[in-house]
Length: 457
Image 1 (cartoon, helix red, strand yellow):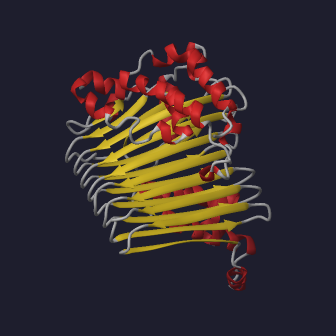
Image 2 (image 1 turned 135 degrees about the horizontal axis):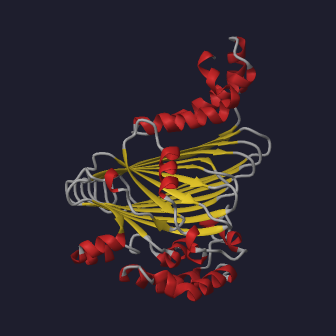
Image 3 (image 1 turned 180 degrees about the vertical axis):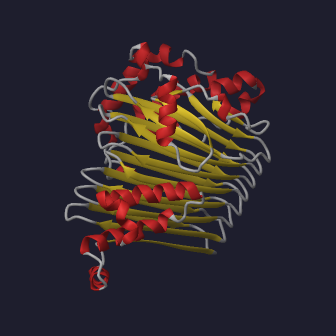
């Protein structure tokens, strides 16, 4: 049992706002909240007493009473159209044509119809409430997935998200449907005070469907914002999903994220997490192979600066045989930043011919930066090929000397080695405009004022 003091306070907050929170929600969503509240009271908000949260005490983030968007004045709960357009322009990825959606605090804004005219027949991107109003016969399908993939009973963080959900973004692709362009989803946090938001996504891809989703955070810097996001994903036979999550926010902002994936036979999933600017970040990734010959690629790049805290946790469960996992994380840690990686790969009895690789590499760029890593394999099958490992160190002084001997300044040599270290992860992005965009962010970060002259080095 964890310290539930803050959990009890949070549940009391939910009880006081329960009627307002559930007012416009589908019954499926509101019904899950009661069990989630009980689970949160029982589990508590995760603390360092839990092995999986050893480096992150989330309970302390709730020492102060949280404030929700439904408690704000009505004029603060809306985002003017011109502001919406400005945000899309500011967060746009050059040369990438996308469908667009915005979560403003914890509310999904109405989609801009002109951006969704070419959505394939049967495909749906939008509010779960709108989907069920259009297709009430699909309620059973939704009920079998929502709250069943990411379970409140398994993690207090999921329970916390569930009780405060005010909207659910649904991405649904029926059998054989391929999205012709990516979905760009922007999370905006903006208010006149510190604010908490629960955001929830449900991604359902039927057989042979294909989708590409890019997530992007945009946080104001005038207050402290805390987001708690849960993404439930079901990928059926032969379907393919690429999900890229870019965080490049201010130091006062905190992000909690849980992604849970269920993969069927011959499905392909790629998840990329790029934490390039933050205050406090905890990312949970959980994946389960339910059918053979499925594939998961999980990649992460972290740049820590100041006193930022970045904690990535993954658990991949190989239940079916002949599945493949390739997991790679890299951290570049400056100043007083802390980076943590915990990766668990579980291979069940009978999951023969599993292939699983896991690697974490950390580069410490200052004396006070800290890195913690715990890769872990749990194997109960015989015919498998698995490896895991971690390295932590500083820039290679021999390489720096070699570059200086060829006329490259010491500081420039350091920057070039850092970018080369990061580029290994960036090059794994299977979307050219996004890959170039993230590389540019990283180069600007390390070159600073010298960025425009970098090509002359």
